[in-house]
Amino acid sequence: MARVEIYDTTLRDGAQAEGISYSIQDKLRIAGALAELGVAYIEGGWPNPTHQVDVEFFTRAAQQDLGGSKLAAFGSTRRADRAAGDDPQLQALVASGAPVITIFGKSWTIHVDEVLRVSREANLEMIADSVAWLAQHAEQVIFDAEHFFDGFATDREYALAALVAAAEAGAARVVLCDTNGGTLPAAIEAAVRAAREVVGVPIGIHAHDDIGCGVANSIVAVAAGATHVQGTMNGLGERCGNANLCQIIPNVMLKMGHEAIATDGLEQLTRISRLISELSNQTHNQRQGYVGASAFAHKGGTHIDAMRKLPQAYQHVPAELVGNRSRVLVSDQAGAGALAWKLDALYPDLDKRDPRVRRLLERLKELEAAGYQFEAAEASFQLLARRALDDYHPHFELINYRVRLDRVNGDGTIHEATVKVRVGDGERHTVAEGNGPVDALSNALRKALGRAYPDVHRIQLSDYKVRVLDSRAATAASVRVLIEYTADDHVFGTVGVSEDVVAASWQALADGIAYGLEKLGVEPVG
Image 1 (cartoon, rainbow, N blue to C red):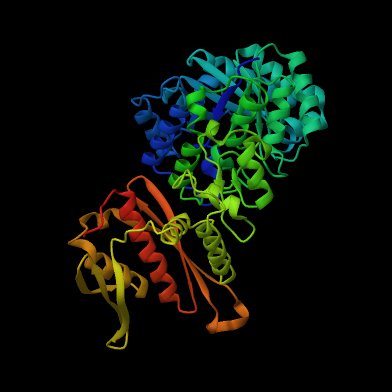
Image 2 (image 1 turned 30 degrees about the vertical axis):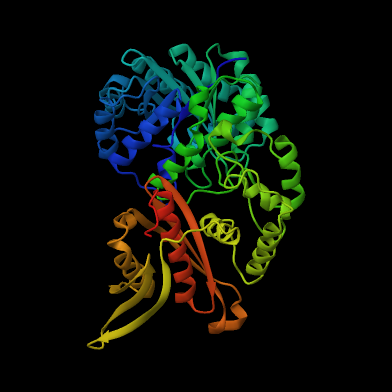
């Protein structure tokens, strides 16, 4: 099977997504991650005087080890009123030092007539002149035919003529762009096949997801003969985003049998996808195919039972191929067999007929009926299971706590928490302040445990969510608190439920500290 080149434009097209703003350091870290993934091209941005971050990025990225990935600079064809060599924008692309230069040009007659307002012949000359001049100064020139599929539907011959002009001028790749993201797969296939008939250079696809077909259109294009695919990690991009490389890469490799990136790169896909979400300051989409936390999660009892016997019964590929993992979600839909499988990692020989498993299952169902949810709180589940199976040695036990709110001079508040816990054979009684009652409780608990367990400060609260479970109960409603913690490289969640938000928070806080100490390998005192 042919090799399919992956061209990543997360740093340029992805940065145009709403809510995305990369610093130079962000861009350098993302570029390093993409190089580790093993993409063929990393498009770093549009280097011109109005994009100083991109200009500096190319200067610094040139000193960065990107392995086999090639850095690409992005721009447009020359202006209509000047020669290619005199165009400041083209000069800036060359000055970036990027070995690959990608430029876009118009292939839709509406844009030529109404946006550029030049003759159609002049537009083709702009494409050819720009490609030819850049080809003298770069290792490779890639031509992005903007709005190609709309142009192909409007004036087939002219859209194809734009590709021919670029290819004959020296473009190493011509890329068909569904810039508006509104083309259906059947039209993509027909246009790719037509393009292959008129140009002799490799054909690429650049799809957007405005109608939810970005990945499908990219896959169809590859099936029709495209060997160069552009997209972004996690589908970041303007409007509804670009075609998502986190689905395209494994589909091309695992479903179509093509080479795209190295196998060890594919195994890093989930980690790098989540890293880029973090650097983009975006919540990672847990239902994202292949790399989402829910992509290989199983909740229904029938599914789980089948998975125990034959994993491929309910998984299209092994999760490990893309660096993800299979999970069993403990819930009221799961049976004792599913619970036993969930506990396999802790107790490989546990029999699902063990009375303790039955009691634990009944307890879980009671808790879920009360509003607990363990899908995102595996730390709380593991602690609950270990207590039920008489295999838990606590680092501390709560004696009592109290939270007080003081108003200062009528225009400020101070939250103060008092915590008394038993550690080994002794009691620890501490007071701490915080920005709100939960922060005060967290500070007091850490202070109480700090002398016995100095590593408690390596456990960091990274996310805190509160949800009202029954809005009709108004202020008397129960709330569910979910807390996410990090302890070095470990990320885990805990849960608490109560009619009192402070009590619910305490449950989740205490579980988080207890589990975190275990993950850090800290032995209980006494």
